[in-house]
Length: 105
Image (cartoon, rainbow, N blue to C red; front, side, top):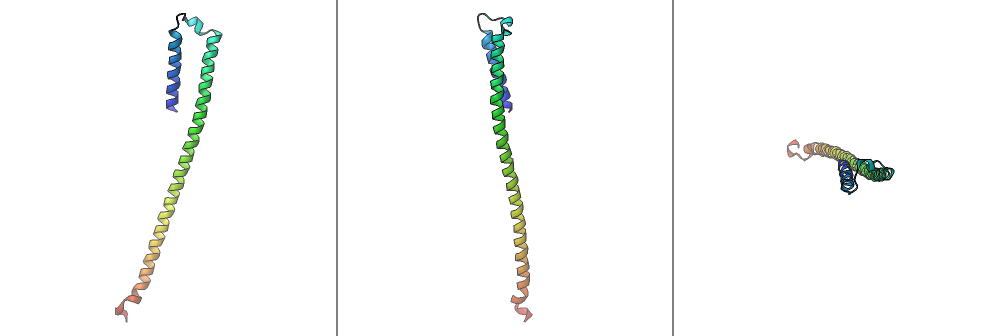
């Protein structure tokens, strides 16, 4: 978003510079209806394009955040399953020790 603002201001400055370099430049002509229509049209087009790009980038960011949350949830579930497997394996080895120990016979 910050890059879009920077590009917008840069293009606005470039438009003003080009208008300033015209041979018949005057500040009075800057506020004539035809010039104001051009400025407002440029701002309107910029806002439309900026809105579309903002909407797309926000949707992408939301999808990425959702994927990160799902991945984090799956990692937690995996850790919990690993703990349960380790606990079951420990219980099985404890149960099997007395049976396999020849000293108990």
